[in-house]
Each structure stands twice: as structure tokens, then as C-alpha cells.
Image 1 (tube, rainbow, N blue to C red):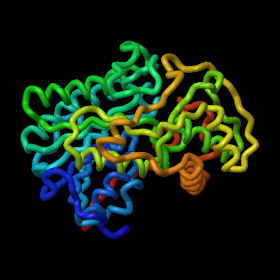
Image 2 (image 1 turned 120 degrees about the horizontal axis):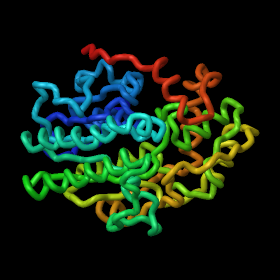
Image 3 (image 1 turned 135 degrees about the horizontal axis):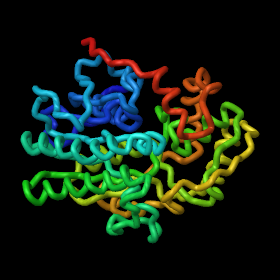
Length: 354
């Protein structure tokens, strides 16, 4: 493991840090960085979309305590008073949250409320991992934090979009009514190692399909844009935000805008694949353009992304090539089916062994 980094600057750094969604894609990387910085971490995850293997490097670490738990249910008794809470618990894959809309909504609302109550009782600083989806299908480009968004409150994506909007509203209600110190990070298309094969996100979809020699599935005409931020850059920003005293929402993403067709070309080139493209109808309410204005992150957090897209894609391809090959034969190009095939083969409970 990497030696401890510079001294921790988190609020109440003498107390443990609670991370929910800790076995997820971003959460597991965050836990590793917190441990490297010298923190004690209480890690919660119910494994609905997370992987136990994501935490295997920390399994025997004495400063990590793992608790398997769904935050929509009453929190476990005996949780220690934490100095900081990072709430990353919520499925981010369209394939998952559209198959489980009620659970997604409850995680973002009831789960966030439970954690805010915990933060209020212990005096912890609370960071909510929100999303660019709060902007919906935006009519303003790039998207600044002051933009209120253009979202469909009853569409197939609303369980996630409106759930995250409600979570933000809860955070600021607690700030106004109870004086709670809150942070809100709006994440834009994070990618990197530990993305799940076939989880419905465009980066992992394209890579897995290219490695399998299958056609790359493009929804719509492929001219819609996304902005891709590598996971190490995202985690640096989350830590910088928690370290700061900034309480308003902050966009965390890469302002470089790419079409889906451009991404497909890069993935094919980096994998050496000659897979053709296959076009399917654009899903309902899928945003046409997505690009963050990161002026706030630059000025307040002194943060900007550092990992270029080709570098990040190469690292992600290497990860998925090593781990996805046993499942490539059964992964469907259809993003609605693959998660179940992967989940049943990979999830294991984490047993802490000090």
C-alpha cells in the first residue's frame, strides 16, 4: 500500500470517517485514499451494486471497519461518533436504478435523512455525492452550479435524478434548520478501474464490447456529448471539498466535451478492436449535452482534472481486460441484462480480519 500522504485536513480528523457506498466504484477508491491519509474508516455498503473485491486491499487493515448495511434501513447501533460522513450510497448505473426505482429513491431520500440525523447527533461534516443528473437534459451549456436544470420528474430516470435533487434539498434543509455543515459534490461521468462490466455506463459498455469483439452499442446518433473524469481526479476533488469550508454545490468533472462517437473511436483504437457500431433508439430523457463549468472547483478547491482521456481509458481497459475476460462470452450487448450475470458471480461478503 502507498505510504501515508500528507497530514489529514478533514474536519474533526481525530474521529473516524464514515463512508457509505464504500464497496462501490468511487467509494472504494475514496476509502483507500482516506486510509493512506491516516484516517480510521467505517465503511458501509449493502452490496446491491458494490463488490467485496473492491475492498480486498484493505480487508486486513486495522483502520478499516466494514459493516454490511442498507442505509434506507435504520442505521446499525453502536456506530462511533464520526468527524466526517461521505454519502456515496446510491446506484449510478442506469441499468440498475431503472430496474430498482423504488430502492433507488429510498436510498437517496430516507437513507440520506438517516445519515443527516447521524451527522447532526455527532457534529460531523456531511458530504453528499450528488450528480450532473440534477441538471436533467440541460438547456444551458456548460452547466454552472447556479443552473436549476431541466429534468423530467416522472420519467424513467426520475428515481435517480429526483432522488439526488431531493437529497440535496435535505442537506440544505438541515443546514438552515440545524446549522449542519454540509458539502455537495455534483459528479460528472466518472470512469476508471472498478467500473462493472455491462453496467450500462458508456465507457464500460464500449470497452467490454470491444474486448469481446462485439458491436459497440450507440444509443441515438452518437452525437450527444459527455465529459469524462477519471476516478483519481474525482476522489481528489471530494477530499478537497471536505477539507474546505465551502458549503454550496460544486461541479466535479472534466470540462473536455466528447461525443459518444468520438469515445467509441478512442476505445476501438486503444483496444485494437475492429468492432462495428450498432445504433439503437436514444433512451427516454437521455441528455443530449453534458459539460461541467468547473470554475467553482478551480477557484475554491484549487482543483482541476489531471488525467487525460486516453490515459484514463488505457488504465480502465487494462483493468477490464484482466477481470472481464471470464464473463465476456455471457455479457449481452443489451445494457438491461448484463448486471445480473456479473453480480451473481462476483459478490462476496467482506469479513474483517485484523
